[in-house]
Image (cartoon, rainbow, N blue to C red; front, side, top):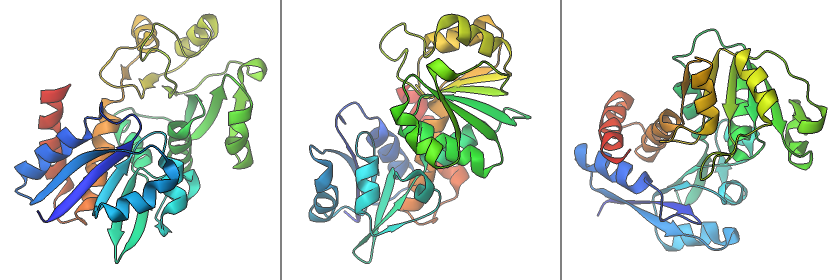
Length: 266
């Protein structure tokens, strides 16, 4: 086998990344394989990567920050986010990237005239989205239940609020990055405030994929254009695949095959 890739996570058995990547690898006639790796200790990321002789890897929660710290070199926007989700080995050095951020931005290009955004939540995905929006000159505000997790945003020049010091405003798009609605019927924000915000927005997006969350159901009730996180997942995978194979394949061809895989899986 020519190349070996994996996804690191805990848990990781639920990840559909191996199915998406292996489908595309086979369709494009590549001699490679993509597996799953359950990592119990983030401090062992680099050693596990090298001992397993992986050529590249994706990294999911909760190890994106660990991977960032252990890579020998960081490329692009991952420097600002301080988290990586894609790693390749080059000359026995680990090079880290973040494709979550550009993947998200690609997923919202169909929404026109976005100049402002409200991001619900303050985890790693929120950091990625806040940074990619900022780099594309879209003003964004971060809103999180508690204050401590806002420290990163405040220290890096973002406008950020906890629930107790936020006043409703108008935003072109509202983005839910919380887990609210993943396995329950919870909203990511107090209902009345969320209704006010959705009423005054143009678009809504939830990073949770393959599910109409209570947040998106509310967007539908208000007749707002909305989408889940499936396209973000798709585009970050396309970009990661492109990095794995160093641009040897057209991104349009990668996307075409991955969309076929998504139709089979989602």
